[in-house]
Amino acid sequence: MVITVENAPVGSIAPAIGGGHWTRTERGWEWCTGATFPRPGGDWTGEIRIPFDSEDTQEQGHAWNRFVLVCAAFT
Image 1 (cartoon, rainbow, N blue to C red):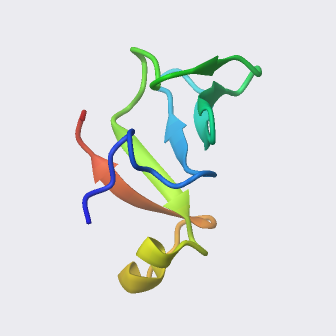
Image 2 (image 1 turned 90 degrees about the vertical axis):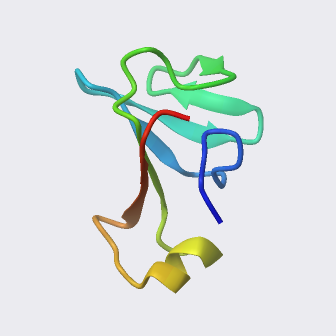
């Protein structure tokens, strides 16, 4: 399965170029300061890191700081 901003599991992180990140919630993508948006903003790096304990990452078998990089392209 391809992970995109639309289907990323809750708890996924989308880092920003200048620091900070969005966290996937049930309502959308929450910026690190608390506001929630439908998608990560324009300074999103294009990466999505999903929590290591999700089903998708168990298939990957690798972790990076509790998260696995699964997408490096704008979707």
